[in-house]
Image (cartoon, rainbow, N blue to C red; front, top):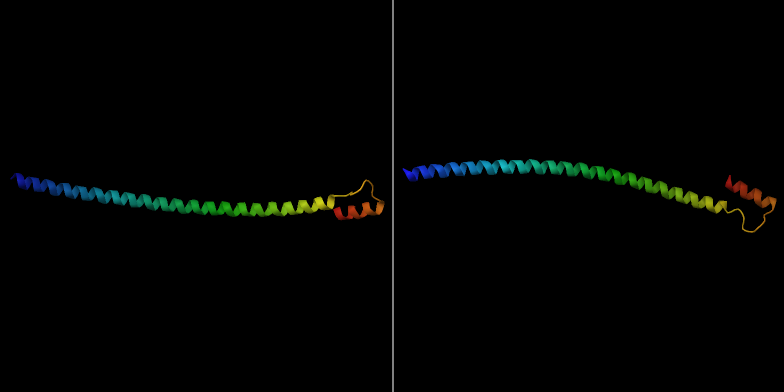
Length: 95
């Protein structure tokens, strides 16, 4: 009698254990899927932010080049005095 009861208990325990393991595995798989989804979304947001930063960098580089050009054109006087023709020519460059 004890052996059969023990065997029934053991079988019940094994079935319960198997069900618990199945539930744990299912939960872990769902969590992994959610993690993968969030990771993909984060990667997409990061790529978008990087693209915007590259655009901003290009704009700053163009602005820097433009400012350097303006500084070169803006160096009006190399000596103490310039004649009227030189001043007119430099003014036209600035315009």
